[in-house]
Image (cartoon, rainbow, N blue to C red; front, side, top):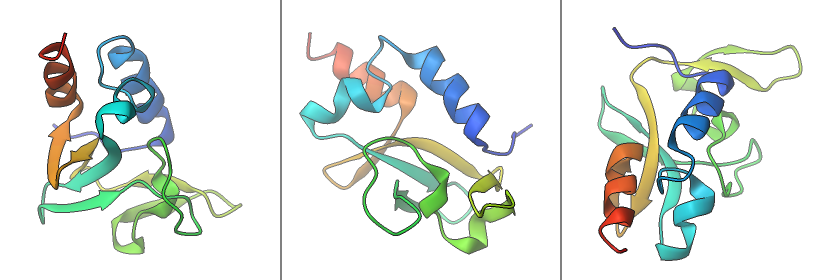
Length: 108
C-alpha cells in the first residue's frame, strides 16, 4: 500500500536516512540533487521552492499542480499523489534514498 507523500512523511524519511547518505545534506557534495519521481508516469521533478527556484532539500511546494492532492490555507502543499517518491538525481538518473545511500557507502 502506497502512502501519500506529505511534509511529515518527508521528515520521517530524513530521520530514517540520517547518517546513511540518503539525505540532501550528506550527498549534495557528490552531485546528488533532491528530486521526486512520479512512479506512475516515470517523470522526475527536481525539488523546488513554490516560486520555481531549485531547493537544496526535499520540498513539495514546487511540484506541479497535477500531483498535488491538498494544500494548506496558506497555499503550501499538504499532500501529493501516492505515486510520488522522494529521492535524488545525479547525472540524469533518479536514485531512491536507498540507492543514494548505497552509492555513498560504496565511496567510503
